[in-house]
Length: 46
Image (cartoon, rainbow, N blue to C red; front, top):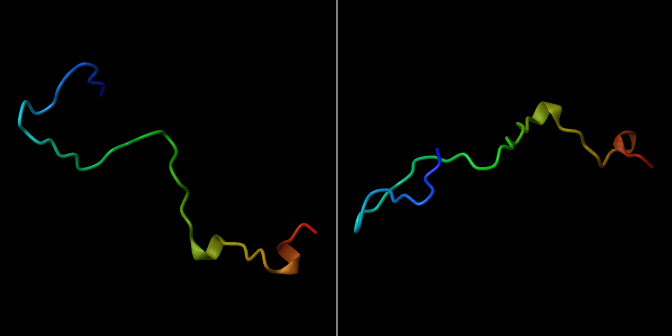
């Protein structure tokens, strides 16, 4: 929804927003089972 040059609510009124969608990137889930312990030698590149 685009509101270029339009006002929402009116003069002297407050508008509240419950949620918003900005950008387009959704952060992937961070599950304990899929984490890699990079401190271990087998998970390091060197």
